[in-house]
Length: 137
Image (tube, rainbow, N blue to C red; front, side, top):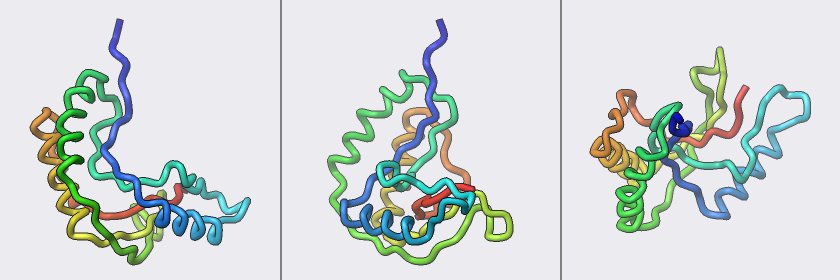
């Protein structure tokens, strides 16, 4: 029997206050016929590392202990919401994002990449972009 696989990523949630503010922004921007699948408040997160589209449960379990240790040694930090845009670009948008700015968040993403690489996951080749996906087209 083949082992169950998951689309997996490492992410962080934001404080209740930030989630509420982003949810209010989404409510303000959205309309029923806009063709955008807006991100539900319960699904708001900042992706630090995409692990893969089909990762085996055993690989995730092995990584979890190292990530828990990293989380335990990471102090809370603040970030600034700055700007908005679309991936891949505004001419052909597929995802809408709110930009984030935080040296601590960028450092955490780099440490997550190190931990994941130590567990056998490929290092990120693209430059990490601090953002919060708020909708998909």
